[in-house]
Length: 299
Image 1: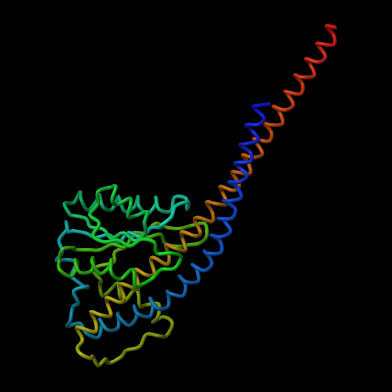
Image 2: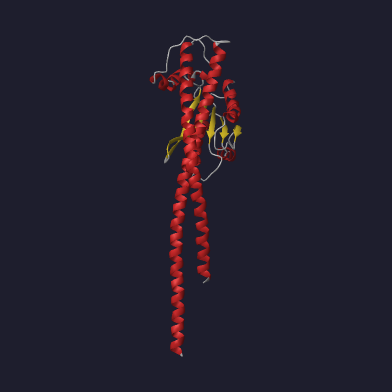
């Protein structure tokens, strides 16, 4: 029964794996609810700061912030920066693979047009991938935990913002997984910089539609340039924070689904192994009985 013993060992091993995947599924489900609440809580701040920024930019058309560079002056083959948001851990299905595939395609398009590419990696998986791909990673942050920390995000993002202000970059794209629902997460590559008046007006339209958009006459201290630049910077940081929150909610949803699939597959494998074990055991018993009967008949 050496074969039977080996099969029993496999069954025990798969059962232990199923216990682990089931526990991970339950943990991911708990964390997903918290991540969704955090993501939804951050949205009103992003909407409100977008409305204020749109109102300010409309009230002061004579001043153009360096974050609102004219797209027509950047040329067709500019240098582009990518802020890539991924997870720190794996076991979440194809979540990271999908967004990194989209990032790779966009980077190749920029390089094919004669531009140079720089990247900021938020998350260990993206950081490792970009390093293996030989990308120019100007800054990174990993091990963010279960909740995004804006203070840890500001430093790496500021490196790319400074390159954009200095003219080393003509555009910056934000890459992350947008949370749609538990079963669907969309890999998204969206333009972040330069900001446009139309884009700000569109972002602030939600607040205006809710009756929160008013025409104000602003008094600036110390001056309009400082206030608008600082507000735009905070707006960009809010967009990055929201993207990280969306990606974390997507991570937990994808992990829960992946672990549920792994648990179900383990159950199916255990059933197949038990069937094989029973057939092997039955064949061994039948063989022993045949030998006994044959021996008795020979006597």
